[in-house]
Length: 85
Image (tube, rainbow, N blue to C red):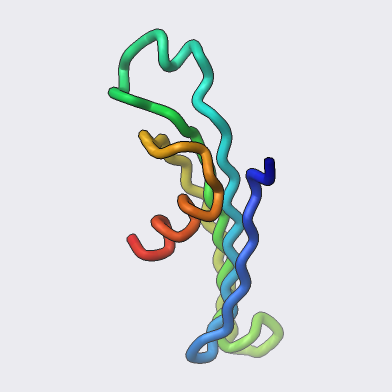
């Protein structure tokens, strides 16, 4: 099962790459019952370039976010929800 999804987009002078990784929630988290119905743990990495990094006024940024979910560990489903959020 593929649990990594990469997406590259160009829009309005901005290049963006998103990499989404998901995995089934570990049994230890499920047993602790801290989060109701937890099924998935995941990470999203975002890299953005505005006006091209090589230009004098270019800007680049990187961001990493982590998440938990009650949805099944299907990477395209999570990638879609995160993008629209």
